[in-house]
Length: 144
Image 1 (cartoon, rainbow, N blue to C red):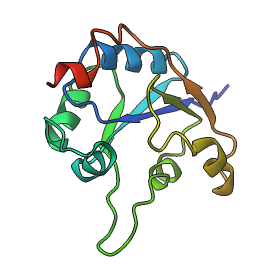
Image 2: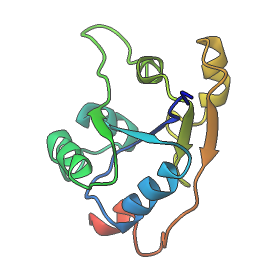
Image 3: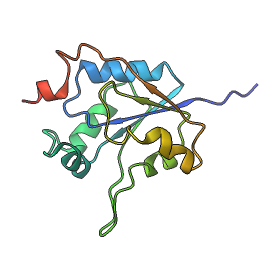
Image 4: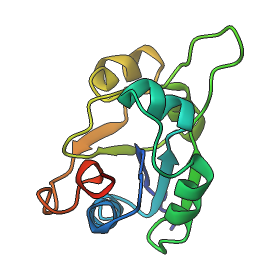
């Protein structure tokens, strides 16, 4: 009997892959059989956090791909010249069954539950995952 593989999506900056990120991937993997990670573009990180990431998007992507904890990693989308970035388009492209959010994710995540049904993606479940030693493993602390 064929059983559909459950696709899980996570996204983030992953600016210096650390144990907190790895735990995030491990928690997310428990929700399904195929884990896709979207790594934020440098331009998106700059807009979101007001400063460029310590590691560029290719370095961050390679670190996630090399972690051995994900099935697929890709860069997020960028807006075409003169257009506004649609942060939800990547969800339409990947079509996950589940989206797992980090304990402190707000950008993009704050309107996710109301935006998905507007795009015919209301079936996607959203879970917020637990922090893993945030006093020790948080990119803002590690990238000073």
